[in-house]
Image (cartoon, rainbow, N blue to C red; front, top):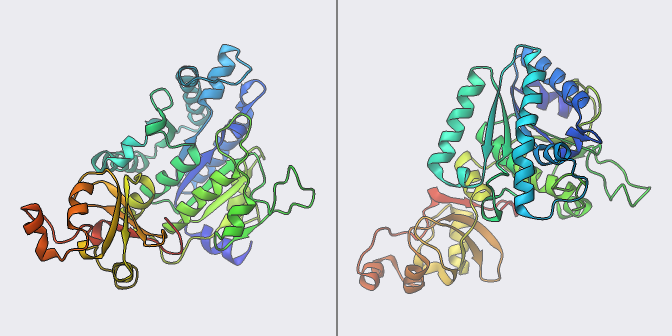
Length: 380
């Protein structure tokens, strides 16, 4: 066991495991043998005092198999119908597998709207906390039956990244159909080497990740690396490993150099900052002068109207908006106290002029520091 892995694994209690479609399915639909192996390992972790949450794929693939469909599903209604058919069987398989160990599961289906609304976000967090306290294993999936592009996570890699923050995970394990992250596409390059440890997600690391998706899944390695970037930003280590390997979780927790380990950043985002930075979708852009940029990045200040030089988009009060330098570099994202129309009227002015121009002044700040997530080396 390397010293780094020893230190990370020694204190792990809350674990989030994301299982990809390529791991869960085979020629005969759901791969019951693989699922049993994973459940065996998770049950063993439970006996040792760990609390596990699963983010699972596989509903659409399961539904396709049940209906005898071999080709690609092209329309949204087809995908949603397949998910509706497959989700029930997927949960039954998990329930039966965990039931052998006297463990209960709970199904949770989500769309982004469940997490972007702060009250619903808190409700999700409280429900998960209660389930984990009861020793129940939450099994989470995107609600594909009702999700449309506007409320989709994109893929379960990003859903898992959001859930890791919500449950305050000590570790996220992304089980996929490759050994981990390679320095180049292993399908195209015979010289590809597995990267065992990533201390920092640089542009070179992102470039090494291919966007090619699994034939039965949604996300490729690039999606997993971008998810790793989000997870490590809030101080959670992240491992990509081959899910079809028997005993993979036992290998990881025994400290073997299995898969690719991404180390968490030292200067982490707190839970609210993470929610703003990665869960909310920006509705517009505010461009700042050098003085406002320096005040936010280096002095921890709020955004005042005097530092604003341009506004893009049509957003309302409370919407998430990006803050950029004059040359277009993102420095923050936050919730605005004024609408785009109002900000255009007061941009460049001192706070004392807000009421004179608008006829009212609800806040001195266009964006308060408490409602802002500031970039740390391009994290947002």
